[in-house]
Length: 229
Image (cartoon, rainbow, N blue to C red; front, side):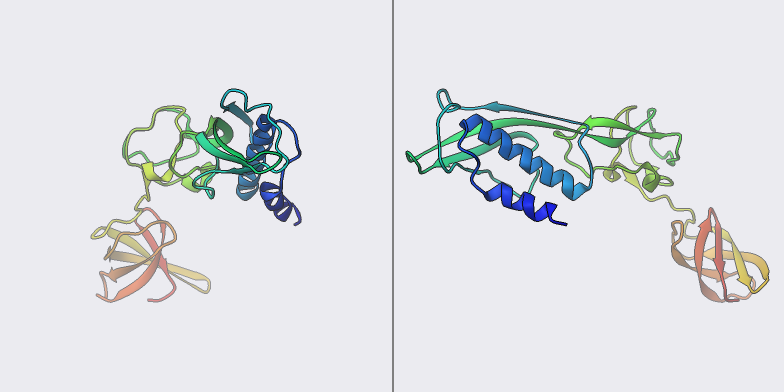
């Protein structure tokens, strides 16, 4: 429980009076550690490449202040830092870092075509550098099962939800099997779906025998269930 406050303190506390380059390296490593802690993950690999103005790397500063824009975002890709010092001399400079971070992400195990419904044979996990990814990261393939591909995804490419849409197991206007389940019995009849429905979703269904409109839960393709007749 003390780890997060400790990391937060480290990100703002003065770093040891070592070379400027080493201090910046340590600062970025702390930022990455905080980001991974928030995700609850470990990095597969990370790489930090620094570019500092000539002669700055070996400068000495008793209290180096390091900042960047969009501080709430993880430092990934090409990141610009502002370096400020007030002791033993006052100066300000800039430095850039190229930061790569590899995490185990859900990827397509083969090329996925539009309108395919995802299952466990289509997805796998793979170590991916997330520096250039601008969409949601997916770490658990099972959370995507049953979703439909909106556009082609190449084999080995990360799979994120902006490329997918929820699969309708029941289409509005379709005829469905309406199953009634009670204590020790189950009967079924035909019904008309009045709205689209995903797995586990409650939708309105018209009983074609009685004409009544009732709420039912989608339990499979074109199959809904209710406890009321």
